[in-house]
Image (cartoon, rainbow, N blue to C red; front, side, top):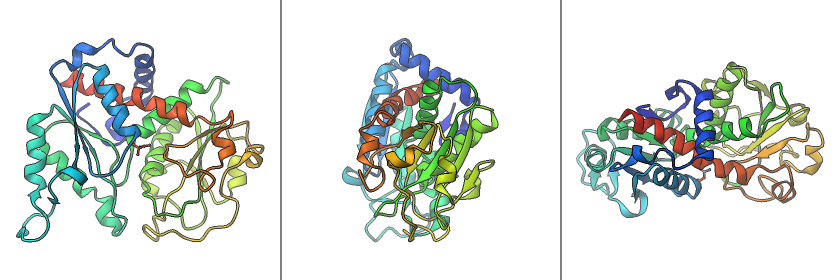
Length: 320
Ligand code: CP
């Protein structure tokens, strides 16, 4: 694997899930792969899980790790070509990415969307330029439109916990929030679940209020509804997540009552397990009674971020 920015970079998602679960059983079996290799983690936005799980994954593989908090400690970056840099930007991404590529064998990058201009965000201009100029393999730590390490951990969690036989019904359920959040996590989750559905692993449904439809590029084959109760009926896994509007780009629209999941709504499901990528705003996006109850998988899911990151880094190291 030369880069990991979406499900399309993965040859066999079933095998990658198996690799992650094997690493969970035997975390230190491949320490030779990372000897004298350095992972650089570049953050333009905050992170808890992605930062720590990627560091721990690299250490388990014997790698060295360097973290650059570009937003707080780096020079202000220019991304446009042909501009006279007489404003606030200090260093061009052409030099900054190239220099980081000199110090690292693999680079991870987190860069959120601005949510102002849909074309600009969905072109992934910053990410693509970083990949082009750093000239080493790049792992997405969340881009403007996708969060593939999270989605891999989510699929690992579903495959690991589903014991009933047959295909589980997996539901991505929109939830309320007061801020405009990116579509990266739901886009990516949808993309990975659609691929898993195509491969016969599960059945996938998305429930959202009108106006919150995701880009169809990420939802091929998904069953899509505006009715949460219809989606919850018989659900085995509910992936709760807020996102801002794609159509009215970056906006928080009005929505009907009843979109926050609670124990009453859980009764409509097949005793569904509840997932969320975290961080989560309690009793706004998801009820405390669910987070603290027996159906919550959120901590288990966050734990699996480590094995997802380690499986991806392992495949990259094997190609170096
Ligand atoms: N889920 C997730 O990516 O968490 P962080 O933003 O804390 O890394």
